[in-house]
Amino acid sequence: HLPEYRKLPEFSGRFYAIVCTDSHATDLKVVQGLLAQDPAPAFLGMLGSKPKAEKVKGLLREAGIPEERVKLLHSPVGLPIGGKSPGEIAVSILSELLAFHHGRLPEAQARLAERDTAG
Image (cartoon, rainbow, N blue to C red; front, side, top):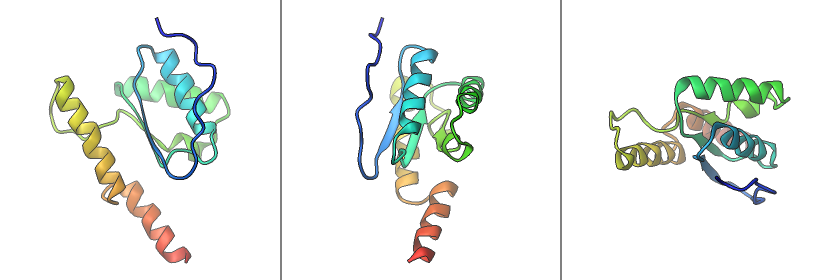
């Protein structure tokens, strides 16, 4: 059993995070803590099923996390490459991170367009 998290590390600047713990409750705590940080992660992924993702998003909303922050959560994380083994799941997660990083996901493309027109 994992010990209680006392405090999440504080990040500055642009950072990416993937949440994958041994319990839904701990995943929720970590995701909520990351979304409360300023700045929030540029990319926040959480391993799990679609029902788990919807439940976590609902609990985040109930906890008062703003919708624009809830929308930052990519879950289930990973591109649908069809793999089921741990290695294939890891590749699918890294593929989504790289697609986001290179502006190939719709969310990333929208952010890049905003940045390019802002300045």
